[in-house]
Image (tube, rainbow, N blue to C red; front, side, top):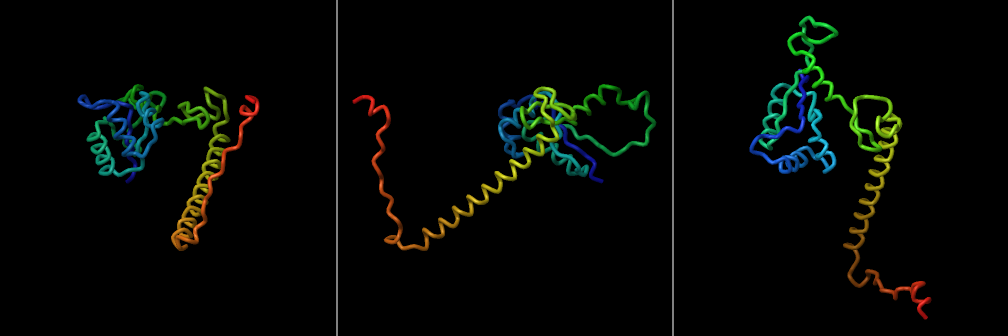
Length: 185
């Protein structure tokens, strides 16, 4: 059953350097520099989820080879009776607080990391609307990139098919005189 998560809170192995581990994690997980820095903020972050136990252990070992100390969390429901206010008597409140920090959101406007809420605590933007807007912008950017790539590919095909003599000649023009050159006279 795929109910395991890989959690990371910025802890690195004793012999590893933080900058080197950050670069390795960014490369392995396909993250940009800003996201890689957020991994080392001290908050617990879910690296991968919905994994089998073998997959989770393999990911934990892969990240340990890169110098990151991760933990595997089992999300399968337990049939043990719970203690006061839903806190398991064996794990205690510390374990519950550590698990809650994994369920945070990033504000698309200011990048503030917070627990699930309707508005950002830092900038006050409506998170649901901002996420929808960001998704629309991302789709428009992806569409524009696809169009530009297809135009580039068409241009390459046209240039390859034409003989050298038939290609247009680009002439350089003299730069226009600027306003300052008129004022100097």
